[in-house]
Length: 410
Image (cartoon, rainbow, N blue to C red):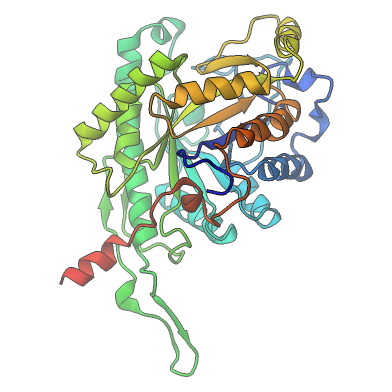
């Protein structure tokens, strides 16, 4: 890797969401709330992330309006509400960028697996191999009501406080989500790399023997296949998941290429990664053939002046009427202090980090123009992109179509 000192390179990604991850971020001095749904706003953010040589950016998405509650909508008017479709946004940004990976979030509980698979495959074609995908389950009754094909019991406040009930509900949804990911992977494999002939003189556009039915049958759906979209530059786009507990760790072990975890200190990082390793062992995954990258999540407020980031967060907390709470560790400090933390936590076995900017564009710029140069000075972050695909950035192999492998064995 260019500019490193021989140590394992550190990977960095950024999670983009609205005006930032603080609920009052849209009221920050440099926020642009009137532009949140405009293409130019997102293009500017991703261009900044690419200038910082980050591995990828992620885009949040959901089937309902944003809400302060885990389990039901709210009527608040003092926080950002409304968003654009993450996959379509990523597709728009693909030709406006050159190297950075683009990872949209999609719901897998209510969306057809075939539609999801071809959408992400199309993004991989549009970006020339920089697509990823974060599948997300939905346990909200309000989300199910948008579709009317199935019902989801509405959780109460007492339900949310019952870990056994929540775990039971989520186990079923994660099991279904794993089936969606498997169906998508089979659809991505359904065209072999050389299935397209495109020989005008002979009139042969495809080799029909190299386009395969997938015949996948899940608990709630089945997919005949093949995909309508030919095999993509990466073969299979990178599948990313966010995991907080044993069931989602197993979901990641079954079908993801990269898992985001949410520890709160270095000791917690080691403990979480041990649980991820246990999930990998339970599922029988061979990480020599299918590596699983592990990133930690941090919600960050960064300023060069000591104490300024904490003061800025406190002002936002006052505007929001409550102290910021998050599943991820909340960091306030300088780029140098964050670099110290990242390198300390990395020794527990992490490959990288996904950072959630508290406000946009302030904290994104602090990452790209403050943190990245600091990491480069320490010889642990790239000084130029060396790969052209997201798999290349992450050091992940390009998989061979399972159907081509099966044909070769016959």
